[in-house]
Length: 511
Ligand code: BGC
Image 1 (cartoon, protein in one colour):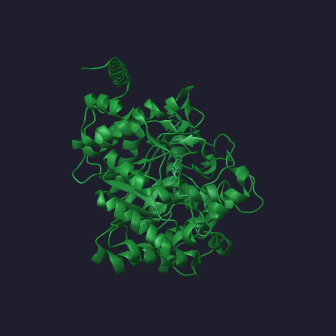
Image 2: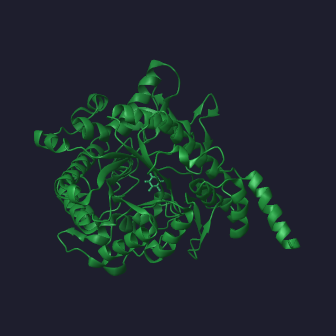
Image 3: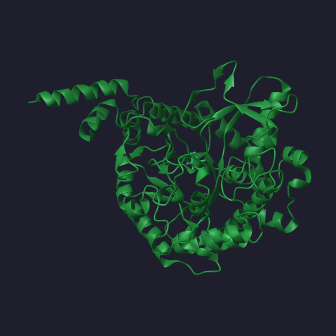
């Protein structure tokens, strides 16, 4: 017997199921066996516990406290979403979601509070051991990033973070501690998350610590936007190469894992079909993707960058080139959006922007029509075809190297009502579109091995603080309560192969 209230719930659920985009039309079975499906987070954005159990301060702890004016809501990651204390609940959430992998990053300052000058913080090691054990108990593969924007504050003081060559040995040492401590269980490593993006935000636009820039970029009291991003990048490329070399020489054979790097990749379309805009799109791709991947695959910076930057772009010494020969195993691709590229050489533009160093202006509109639906972050549009294009491009240029889509996701405003945030139809449409695009790329031979939604749950979104949300799970930032959004249910249905009927049941049991 169905009660009146039960009937109302059933009808409401059925109505929602009709309105809600279903997982139909996209089948997990289309993806290769062993394909990883996961969700991603990073230490500073979720862990909190910024002073617990011997952790040292990191660059973001200090930056958010001393430059709170640079964060939209003036907040910080001191508590974030308290993953440090709630990791067991979060692993349970992942288990319910049906993911077979979790991408997270290690907080360098939790492991080595003072870099290699100080000792290893055993409580930090113990935390990640507990997290890894909890994941493995649920059959969830850890996918670990060593550096996701945060590093011990002391190293920022000593080296300006990535400007001084001494940081290379620091990173090599830190990576070694991690391989030794966790490598028997962690089989997928990435050295850096989006170094191509954060070096520009830190040393060209001055938005991220250490907050360096010079005109025409940003508004800082120190820095050199024409040179420092490339010096920092050079040190990062060599730090990555040293860690890969160490892993391959001393750990890979006995631990049996693989190692890569994660690069932020927008897809740039020429605004018009003029030669100028076509060249502008190429330059933008070069300054975005080739900047890091060309040295790591071919031992040299791309020609376009050398021509434009001349001596501001460092040269690789013969010894550095030798180190670069030891190739990584896969490329991590963070892809969120496609955008139009407009040439700034033939007609002047305001260069104080992310693509300004490539003499390109990125725009989301052509003839007053947007490239895709907008999302809460300016410049991030829903353009699913960009994913397939990116995969094709990277596979073609970089020896068909295996790719993991290490991040892809959709943002909402925190100012929305709870109901709107949880009924995230926009995110479901976005994820379905992008997953279909990957499936199409794979059908055509794309060498993709896994996919991670950014993010498992709402969290601290860097300079946007808590004002935008990327999570499959809604987090109440006051109580830390986690609530599955429609997208979490949709992802679970996709992963478990359930159709819209199960969506009705899901909504009924969960609401
Ligand atoms: C970063 C994440 C960030 C996400 C959304 C990526 O650039 O790796 O840390 O939260 O994009 O902006």
